[in-house]
Amino acid sequence: MNIVSVKDILIGKGIPKVIIPLMGVNLHELKSELNEVKKENPDIIEWRVDALKEAESIEAVIYVLSELHKEMDGIPLLFTFRSYKEGGMKNLNTSVYINLLSTAIESGYLDLIDLELFTGTIEIKRLVEKAKRNQVVVIMSNHDFEGTPTNEEMTNRLISMENAGADIVKIAVMPNSISDVLRLLTVAETIKTTAKQPYITIAMGKKGILSRIAGEFVGSAATFGSGKHASAPGQIAAEELKYLMERLHYHSNC
Image 1 (spheres, rainbow, N blue to C red):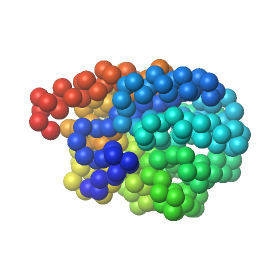
Image 2 (cartoon, rainbow, N blue to C red):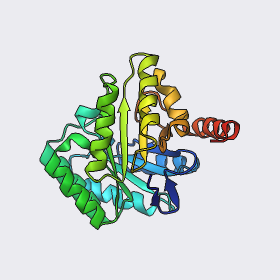
Image 3 (cartoon, one colour):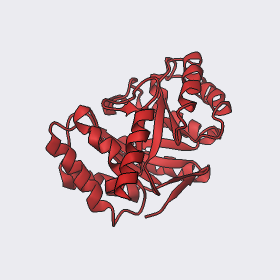
Image 4 (cartoon, rainbow, N blue to C red):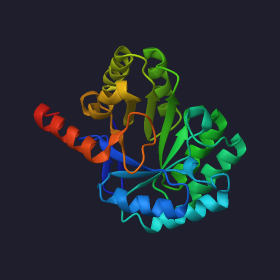
């Protein structure tokens, strides 16, 4: 498996990297939140752009992005606009969504970008190519808030992301039972020896907490911990998450 380097963070090596989201609705809230999040020493900070009140305005988004960029203190910044159909807060039409992502990639203010697998084959291809030209790491993702697909379907989605040129692939599902969580972990363990790129596998909600702390056992390269606000159901406070993963790592010699 390839190791993806973002600044001095090696994704795909060692304990899963901790990503903490920013969920502020305006620049003032975001700066305050960022100051608190930096105290948690995250590996990566994610800006959930869809939480911004003016998220429909590309000009406003890029301005806020430029201001956040100044305050990152060397921590990699992940730009994520989660679509409404995959659990996000804003329902942008596809063309505006694509233009927003494209402009962000070219801005020079971000290190990683989230691209949703089902955005469209042609659109994804162009965005991936643009990201590579601008040295922006692509996390390609799929989020299912309704349930947990079959093992075959989850595997196929991860493979499709690799084939589409993703640097890191991610799938998040909503388990209806502990069996669903175990199936997700089984998929992660199964692809461990064949995956070309680092992968992130998450089961959301309270039932899925195990997947957030035990990723190292099945090869999952990163996990999301909450800072001031959670960005998805089941997220654990970042400080507690790091402690739990470090203890598991120590006692298991992963």
